[in-house]
Length: 164
Image (cartoon, rainbow, N blue to C red; front, side, top):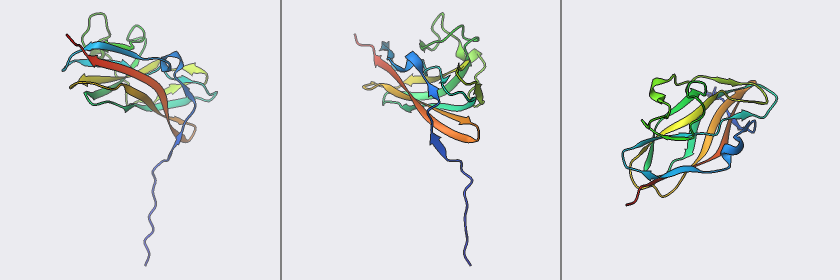
């Protein structure tokens, strides 16, 4: 008797429908961070460069250096945050109070063809020690039609401990 197994896992393909625009072409950062602080770092706002609607189903950082720990990921409507916060220290005056806003992470975010997402994605990072490298790569998971894709957009966040 032979047993035959099958798998229902969906294979993710390498995607190319997303564009990060100008936010994928630079570095944001601060050289005045302290151990124990928490910082929110934004991913590039995803633009659906294809003509077909897609649904973003997840986002995470590709590479987080030693000295930083991801506490959580967030997905927020720009109308709720009065714009787009590229980098903000948790609790800073004048910055969005993300803990008081609806977090859409885990929800499918529909983006029409040739359109920018109304939702933007962030990572909440805790400084745990000296940081000698940058956070790089913002990975998005999305569905377009019946296919699942993963695409990494360029992103670069440089956080360094404040020196006396």
